[in-house]
Image 1 (tube, rainbow, N blue to C red):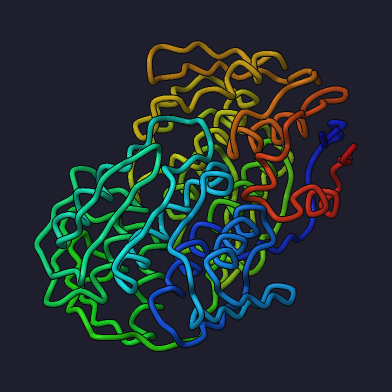
Image 2 (image 1 turned 45 degrees about the vertical axis):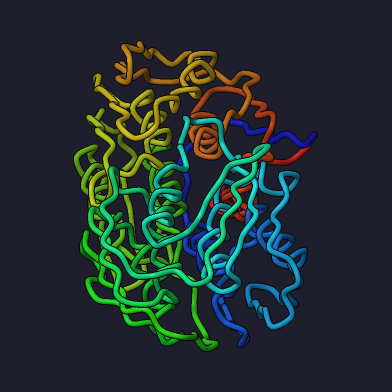
Length: 416
């Protein structure tokens, strides 16, 4: 099993380009199932979750051609609606196949999903939403079995603004008979990006960027071309790593509009931020950052996917701060590993009290989930000595070549 070894050696400096967003690419790939015509996608990130999604499509009978960051998907010869546990167990995003398969083929047989062990993340919003659209759904032996001759428009309100549930119902409603109104929708940029793709395919959607989406169902959708937007979490991860190491970097090929809350927190921490149309420059002036309070909430508030990275930043910052996790009940597993490196963190329920230290110490640690992996890398970059991070397959699910990119910024990092 691969490990990453990092020797803490001071500030990150230079330029780095971010990949396309995994969390945008996955629903785009699922949306290809809504049409028999080809979908052309560019800026696809080279991460393991994308590999898994494409294996699933191939298993269903899709023809997939991939060249670098470009992707062509032909779903005209789909012969199966069965997504097996063996693939789905590694990736939460596989649940996104449920809505498109049901809408176009009238049935779907999708395993209950896996992914990072950061909380229960129930699928009930997906199921109740599709039932509101007329689907008959049962759960048998760990599989969601859904049927519908044709989905019909409905009015549905999400109990919580779930990103994947919003995306699933948005796709399903695009081919439903009649008009669907979805309320309390997730407003993450990835949802809006999916809506733009669906509109390019012929869908009729109003309300993009708001919590209420209105979808007038159509008989069929066509093919389209689409570019995956930049990964806002990868962007935030590099910026936080530079802040923690007292560095100065410019992140290229990104979108500053996706990160207002994160950038605000970095400025509160003492970093100087300059924005361009597709780049962000961060400079700490070589100074240690100040601790900042974090309270995760749905977009446009502070993202849960950046909580672990800011935990590492606070562990190295001057002063103390609280980190409150409101989205997932089990997303503090990185705390024990950071404590192995000397971090002063006290847990009180879903709140972490972090007292910053001048330096952490390198140690053997274990990645417990995708974003926890990033927090350990950030801590290791600013620690004294060597840190060995085990189970880095979590990291590869969502970050494309992060070790090579960090090496380009001056980090001493290698895989073993």
